[in-house]
Amino acid sequence: MSVTIKDVAKEVGVAPSTVSRTLQDHPSISKETKERVRKAMARLGYVPNIAAQNLAKNFANTVGVILPVMDSKERQSNPFYLEVMSAMNEEARKQKVTVAMASGSTQEELLESVELMYRQKRVDGFVLLYVKEKDPVLDYLVQMKVPFTIIGNAYKYSNEASCVDNDNQLLGYTATRHLIEKGHQQIIFVTNNRQENFVVERFEGYLKALKEFDLPQHPEITLIATTDYSEFSTLMTDLKPTACLAIDDMFALRLIQMLNYLGYQVPDDLSLISFNSSIFTTLIHPYITSLDINTQLLGKTAIEEFLIQLKAPDAIKKRVIIPHKLIEQETVICHQT
Image (cartoon, rainbow, N blue to C red; front, side, top):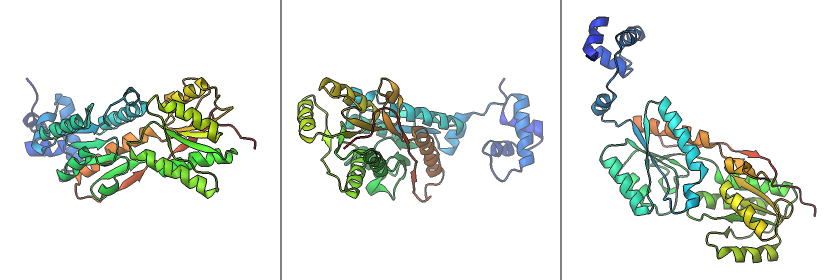
């Protein structure tokens, strides 16, 4: 027969409501009484009914995590999402909550998944792992007053959401500045992603550094379709860049392979710097110089901030900036003019 709150209360000599308040760590119960109740729980083998507690408090004790639309193999295998989810799961475990994922192969599917999870009270709210222009998912969260936190910049919804982010413009600036300090003057910015706002911010940082040092600025180079590769080959011949920024490590690895195919060697012909400092930086030589965006801390802090907002909906929304660090490896060398 299972032990009940009444059994614990009888053991300690207090009212069942005192045991219930102890389970909630209510400030009206003294520290001494809480300690006596908890010792009795351990002695009797009492296990709290978490589901019943959540129902009483109208909480699911589950955080929904919204992934971006997984419309390509590259996005599906991007280590950022695995690393940040791992960090969020770890923090959720410490905070005694669980994590549930919302995903979809189209924007419509993703929105439907988010709406269903929240309508069925399977989650208390969401952490959004991406930010992009004209996002119906973000619009839904704001319009329905769903508790949420963003990993990224909330932009027009800054008053409605707390967010945890890197300073992506500073990341782009730092990467470009590092190349400039190594003697590079002809620097390009290459990406395979134009959907998310961090790409725009890093590109702005790239332009800012070049302008500061009065160096030539170039439009971002987007390599998405295979037909883009021949254009890139022509661009390499025309511009003769000595260095480039790649939008993330996984793309940087593919870019190195493509450059090799075109007859260029990294870093001898082209120095390369990337972002995220993921496992991809050390898969093959040359190891990739990359900016560590501290993914573990991003995930941990996102869970912390979400729970703060959940418990205090009227709390001031804030933007938490996670610091970055340059990890120098083998893909950037000094350029001799």
